Length: 82
Image 1 (spheres, one colour):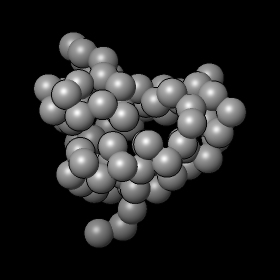
Image 2: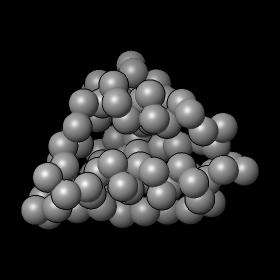
Image 3: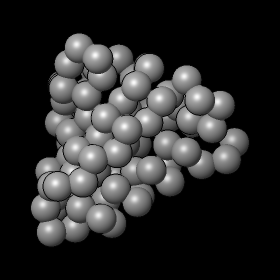
Image 4: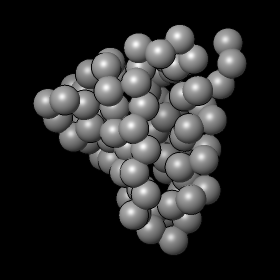
């Protein structure tokens, strides 16, 4: 299992629509979860993601055969240059 913690308050964090994150996550077979300070959501499920605050410290969890590729892709999306 891979874990990546991101501070969304950092200048490099690029806020994006959750629908784009969900579409990207669904391209991978591994399980992908994200948690804030109060809740945890499956990144592939809209109903869970819409209730998650995407602010502050976010922790992403990747578990499965293509977890490395998924982690790399999600990190590039969130931290891409504006």
